[in-house]
Structure formats: structure tokens, C-alpha cells
Image (cartoon, rainbow, N blue to C red; front, side, top):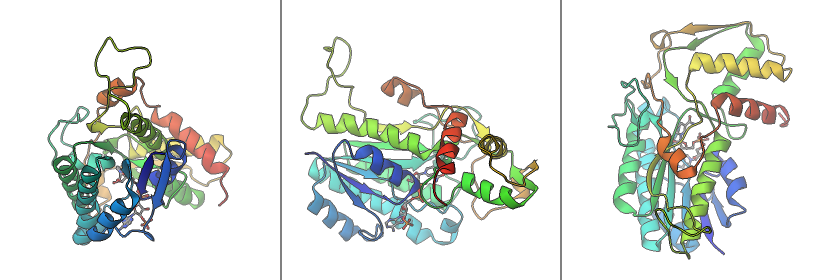
Length: 313
Ligand SMILES: NC(=O)c1ccc[n+]([C@@H]2O[C@H](COP(=O)([O-])OP(=O)(O)OC[C@H]3O[C@@H](n4cnc5c(N)ncnc54)[C@H](OP(=O)(O)O)[C@@H]3O)[C@@H](O)[C@H]2O)c1
């Protein structure tokens, strides 16, 4: 039986991953109580004990503003830990699948960022996530870095959707930033994308990889390696996203008090960390490999809210 080591299992994406990875292999699940990712020796020891064929790292220091004053922890979790996981994967001949972020870009482009566009993070979170990317590329041949953006899900702690619903329950008016553009992405869609990548890698452990045309009917997909951009389809501002959240929630009979969402500028909502003004990711490399486009963000938002409405408080 193949074995997957899954870190960050209590996170938004981590919880979705557990569901979709379980049919593929034995999943060794670790959260903070089993492994503190600020401890490199503990990471090495766990990897050696577990002997996984695949490591999926869904853990990260994701508090973008807090990272500005907690650089060392952010660096340990986002920069050093992925590098140590990559070294362990290389030693074991395993694959590492790691999740990264649109915040490695500075947002100065006005067309979607491809995997090879130059990075220039604006804050500590993006900087430390980039350190993790660099460490992984140097340490491990069989790696996938899946950059995604604006993640929300029904599981895990807070996110933009849950915050909007909480605030909109009691307030008639909300002011939301309209000059940052990106793509809201459902944690479940990210998990499904990673499951597809995982299946290809687990299959390749014992089977030859057939690349290019002329392959027999039962050929497996060419083995994906390297950096991929994956988000839902479409683009939106945080303002667009907020408006859609309330429209879709009302369709499900949500009884919030919200009456008006007012578009504001980033300058009117200062935060400790600067965010990219435009961080749409070009997904063509992913779609070419997967043979499909991800669902539109609005479709996934609808599905997530429907799931949330049936979830106990
Ligand atoms: N959220 C976004 O908008 C966004 C956007 C782009 C990319 N991403 C990337 O997507 C991935 C998944 O994000 P997410 O939204 O699912 O994150 P999340 O919900 O914040 O989950 C991250 C997980 O990492 C764990 N973790 C943090 N520090 C740890 C440590 N020292 N030791 C062990 N575990 C630790 C957390 O544990 P605790 O629960 O105990 O704190 C949490 O379960 C991350 O790589 C993130 O950088 C996220």
C-alpha cells in the first residue's frame, strides 16, 4: 500500500485533502499536536519513521498581517519547514506536493501571472512562502509547487466568506476593498487538484511514465513536476466577492441584515501587510495537464455556501 504524509491536516485545505486523499493511499495525518513545523529535527524524524511515497504539505503560517511582526515563526514554517520536507522527500525518493501563494508577486502586472513571471513579494508572508519555494526546488527533484489564491472553505478557522457572513448578519452596511483583483478559490477544488496530481505520482512509483504522443490507450498522464498555478476560473475584486457572497447566501434563505456593500480603496483600509493589487494567476499550464478548466469561482462559492448551510454551527 502506498503511503502519504499529510501536514496541516486541520487547515482549510488540509481537511478537504484528508477526504480526497484517503481513497488513494494510507494517509498519515499530522497536525500541530503531532508535529511542530518550527522544529526541523522533528520533521526529519517523522518523515523517516513514516517512509511516505508522497508528502503533501498543506501547513503554513497564513496570518498575513501578523507575519509582519513575527518574521521568525513565519520563516520557520513557510521557508525552512518546506525545505526540510523537500530534503526528506529527496532522501526517500518520494514526491513533495506543496501549496504556495499569489502573494509571491507584487501585483504590478495587468495580465495574469504565469509560473515563470518574476516574483517580488510585498510582505513577510509572501517573502517566506517564496523562500519555501526556492528551498524545495533546490532540494527535491520530484516536487510540485501549486500556487493558489484567496482561499476559502467551509472547514477550518476563519476566511473572507465566513467573516462577511458574520459581519453581514448584524450590520446594514459594509465597506469592502474594490481595487485588489484576484480569484477566490474553494479549498475543496484545490484539494481535488492535488488529489489528481497525487494519483499521477503514486501511480508512477511502480509504473513507467509515458510522455508525449503515440502512447497506448491505458497510458498514464505525463508526470507533472515543477510549479503550477491553480485557482478557480474568473477574476473578482474583494468587493465583487462580498456582493456575490451576500447574493448567493440570500438564495439559500440566509437572514442577514446587510443592505449595502460600499466599494472602497485599499488606501481607505490600511493593513500592516501590503497586498498585491492584481494577483490573477494564469492557469493554462494546469489546464493543459489536467485536460479541464477549474470551475468558475461563483459556481464554487455557491457550492461552498450550500455546504456551509447544512453544517452544524
Ligand atoms: N488562505 C489563503 O487565502 C491562501 C491563499 C494563497 C495560498 N494559500 C496557501 O494554501 C495553503 C493552505 O492554506 P489554508 O488556508 O488551508 O491555511 P490554514 O487554514 O491557515 O491552515 C494552515 C495549517 O497549518 C498549520 N500550522 C501553522 N503553523 C504550524 C506549525 N508551526 N506546526 C504545525 N502546523 C502548523 C495550522 O495549524 P493550527 O490550526 O494549529 O494553527 C493550520 O492547520 C498554505 O500553504 C497557504 O500558504 C492560502
